[in-house]
Image (cartoon, rainbow, N blue to C red; front, side, top):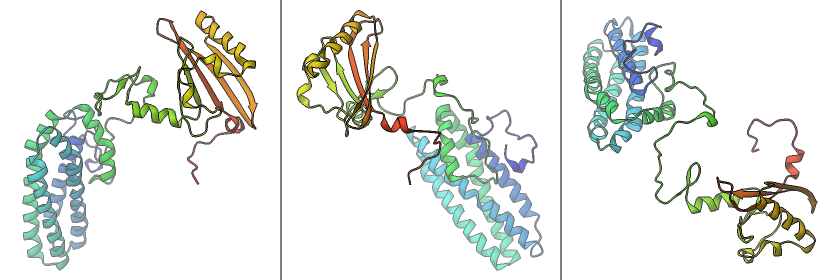
Length: 327
């Protein structure tokens, strides 16, 4: 609820959720009409200072217009309704000119000219609000989805409102842990060129980019003990070259460690183990090495992932760092 209502029930209560973008637009209209009533009661020149204060509050309608132009209109255009972006935006600019002209006349302190110009401005404001309330907002409510209204929050915050105190967030700022967020959303991206994984969609280029920057060495050996993949990171612990692809894994390890590799593969294939873990000192680095069995949902063995990581820096961490420190 907006602060100018002085904690009285909003006449919009029950029609729109608190903080909904349309409710905020309409409550700004209530504020605009309230400011116009106050200005009409002003005695000039005795209350010229008060007039200027109220007029500056009224001038913040530019924020109301800017949110429509940059937030609401683009969504309407997605559904093919382009006339607000054209006709109404033009009307916004006309009102902006009237506000500029009114400010200049107020500074002249000519009571009669101020009254005449103010009535002209009020007619324009009442006209735009009627169009909003009778056509723009009702139709927008029919066209836009709940998800799209929720997307307004951050953009509205960047532009601002006419109110001194921001409206109630929409929807309410209730933190939902990602593990508990089960809502199925309309995807804002095309999935045609992407592969669907257990959760989410990625293009081959995105997958390659992700593997390239991971701070771990990953090698995948299929169920036939053939190396079929490794990630090409910037700083690998154990160097690899393209010739390894298709090679039998037992030939990719020095003779002294082949027996352990074979033992791991046999245990993984038999289903008696799923993880083998080692850590070694190597060229001044502390290296953590893990082998993971890869299985289908039904348990069928599909190979092994070898993952190696330099954890020297990780082992040295102490305490906490919760703030960004890029300097």
